[in-house]
Amino acid sequence: MYLTRHHSSLRFVPLLALIGALTTVVPTEGQGWFPQEFKNLTVVPADIEPDTLQAMMKAISQGLGVRCDYCHVREGQRTDFASDENKHKEIARMMMRMTQQINEDFLNRPGG
Image (cartoon, rainbow, N blue to C red; front, side):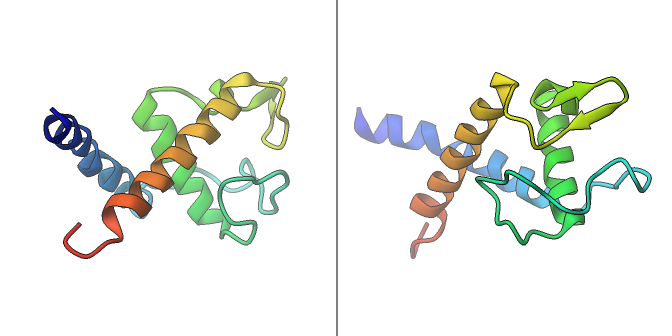
């Protein structure tokens, strides 16, 4: 039974790899709407390149079928990316940490 559960959980690994691959090919939108300096990053490295973070966030939002304001606070025409007021943001962070842990546990070992 463990083997069956173990193998069924591995079926999500290709999906995670696809999301990772998409972060390098997703086109970016016009300049100005996405911040070039970041505040309150807790999962991704603080020195991440703006284009890399933008592509990652875009791939996540497209994969989930949601817009930025699903996780980030929208204030009129402006999105407050640093705010933690939206509960979906912490859920997204937990999912990102879980994905990182799965990748470390299963993809970074010999034969994995």
